[in-house]
Amino acid sequence: MDVLETALDEVLDRALGVLSRRPLVALTGAGLSTDSGIPDYRGPGSPRRTPMTYQDFLSGEPAQRRYWARSYVGWARMAHAEPNAGHRALAELERVGALHGLITQNVDGLHSAAGSRALIDLHGRIADVVCLGCGRRSRRDELQRRLDALNPGFVGAAGAAVEAAPDGDAELAATDGFRLARCTGCGGVVKPDVVFFGENVPRGRVAGAYAMVDAAGALLVAGSSLTVMSGLRFVRHAHKRGTPVVIVNRGATRGDELAEVLVDAGCSEVLPMIAAIAAAAG
Image (tube, rainbow, N blue to C red):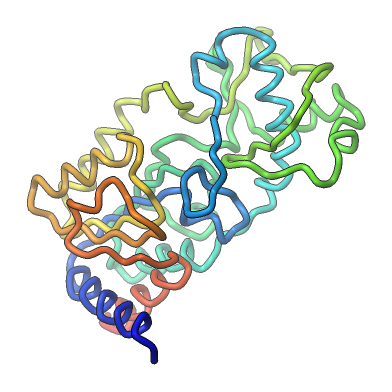
């Protein structure tokens, strides 16, 4: 065993010492889903990306066309993504009674697919669509079929080598000519039922997440750089209450100074170890 492996084992032992026999709440980010083939925004080696903001989306049809064309091409990959070992480990922690709540910043729905139930999708789910006019909600796969009919051959024309981007997006050089689908109820503008950059998380979700953290004996952060306040505030809240924080993430995070233990490693490797020990402890 080399020095790095020994150091990691020591850090894992410390993390397990903090997490064991405490009611856990987890906060997860995009780094948890990279092993499911979904790129993240800020992980080590990730290219610089500029996601569309809510204000950009509202600016008019050109921006909406750009968003939906890219999402239309990227959706097929997102829709076929499957939970990885990290998602399954968190579901197992809930099953054995160790994990009492899960707050995810991800919109991919993979926690639900893995079996997690005590779950707050903080930023919504990309599988749902909402009309900005009448508020009607519908399924993303239904919209995809309508976009198929409106834009025959568009995916093929984009080419097989299109680069996947975070949150079901794709890197497209040109989106001219892409035809938008409108709300079937009122003809209004539709957007994915997710929180865009520059948009506020619904108050009820935030309150529910704070309540989860308040009831936690320890907060486990997995796969989040905590760059945006949306997630960092819960780490700050836990720290202020004296609730120990353990962060599992590749690379530094904005909350490192607030953590009792930092595990610089992949979620797919570390979380199953935590789940196995929790299951053995009963």
